[in-house]
Length: 386
Ligand code: FNR
Image (cartoon, rainbow, N blue to C red; front, side, top):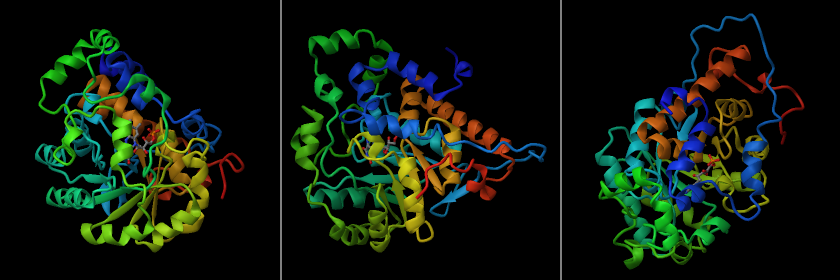
């Protein structure tokens, strides 16, 4: 269908499912174990209700704000996602470009197909770099050095993936990059010609960020066992000072779900934190992000910038998170669906959909400027409390 017919993130998801090789679609569209937390992330937004207000001037509205001092068109950024270049050829570059044109930050994952340098060379706005800490600390120092050289404007340290949660689909699909030529994969790929042709047309088909650091990276046999071998399970709060020193810039800690950890993050000098359960991909049975938010805002909201990701599928979800105190939000899967469906235009479409939904909803609650929006716009008793 033409882009003008695409009116929801769900539309993009359906098209992404048709276009993507099964193993990559399912890599995104899954959570760990029973997927309870994965589903709760989105579902827990639904019961939160808005107060409808009428007969107030709704002309000239603005969702503009700042995230870490950076002007943003709305309180939204793109979350780091691994393997993005497998969702569409050169996916990281396309997504970063869409963000740059739209006016929100893009975060590049350590586990990217395109490298830090690939993205820097093909964009002009500074982007953020997400760091996974590996056992080989020289490797980590090198990633930080490269992010600095590329003038990344913040480092996002992911704190909730020292070890990997189990996602059944990835094991069953035998997820590899690039896919192995097994009979099942070949049969599936034969139905994904458009994806395959684009992929053949790029030189970026494997993990360029981490290539050269581990011998088996050019053709990762099995992704999850590799990650389990390389990522550092010993990473602790004691490492933060050293990482901060090496980096020397703004540090964001991602994957905070508990108020006590939020306080630790502040004590260790985080410039912002992201309330997150990794999109329900790590500890299944943990609370949804929106449930966890109010207690964290109460604990540290006045001391650091508190952001949130997980389950945002509409602009209304962003407005609800903002009303409950999140000064910024991130999307993972929604932009990946757009990217897989239509490349850069699909990411832009996802952002436009979220913008329009948030903008209209804010107006219906009687506001023109997001800066004036507080939890007053929500019906008492309908939202989670600390
Ligand atoms: C992720 N996420 C993630 N986080 C991170 O810090 N580094 C990474 O490499 C990845 N990789 C990744 C891949 C895929 C396919 C998904 C879906 C997620 C987690 C991501 O940054 C974010 O926390 C969630 O995606 C937010 O939830 P939603 O928006 O997907 O519901």
